[in-house]
Length: 383
Image (cartoon, rainbow, N blue to C red; front, side):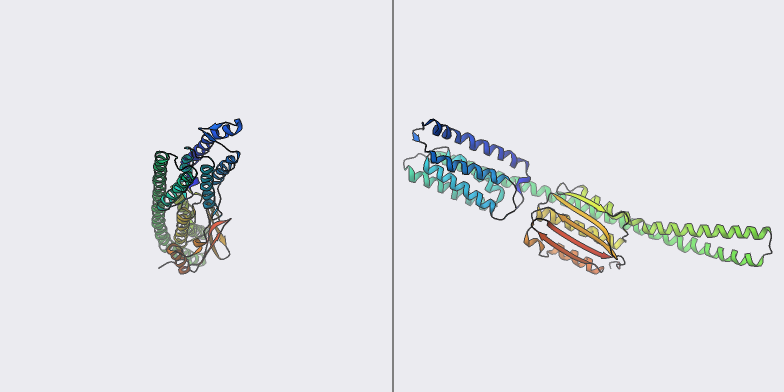
């Protein structure tokens, strides 16, 4: 289930819920302080206890927590507080508190579970009121409250579906941009390789032959001006050969900057989590390594969005011994099941092992989910 605290409308509802809690309960508090009755009912001082407990539980539910079972416990405490308030004072304002609980349940549970919870808490509250005051006219009030609870449940469902659709769309756009970057990198790599081969095979061969001929001529020609010209020509040929080697080397090493560009393209259209990219400036990676690392980063982004509900994802690529290492860590809600290899992680592992590398994953409560991918510098090209 998505972390509902990330939704802006959730915080608006939290403020409204606390205001409603105080607004609905204040007449009761005022009656207790003034020693008066509330619509013909005596309000005991004990009523303040469940009222305060309910408000504290609602406020505690707003605070982010990752401990399992805490949210469910807070919801149960709120329902118990509502029932206690209904028993102490059978007021028509009690169903308002149920609406506050219904929204929280709808944002943390599936629609079916939320509907069941709404039915149970409404029945429990009606039973408490009926037991205290059998002649209490609660049909219309609870009917309206039940309708409002259903409205909030389906509204929350629609908002969750909208958010999940937006995340899926952003993830798809990111994958498309990543694939586009990979294709562009492959085309540039092929062109660089073609040009470097042409320079080496054509110019390199001719310049080498020229150097050999001039070397021979420098030994058979008599000393004089001709010898000086030959020596100058040999020097020019040597300089040209060095320049050709520099061009070939530059073309073959130019792809080391493509990895960072591809990772930045991957992160460009992912609204959440925020992706932080750190690629070592002296990194040397080949085309096959670049492609494998991009795919690993893409899977790490997918996991962070789909499973962890992370706010931040750090992608760091650095030289490591005789190879290159990609560390991907998010700060999302860690789940023990996240370390179980799914199809994405299995595909990532197979891709790395095919190139002579390895993959390790870690899932920790305080550190989120971490992917550690390593490839050797001399990894063979993927078939």
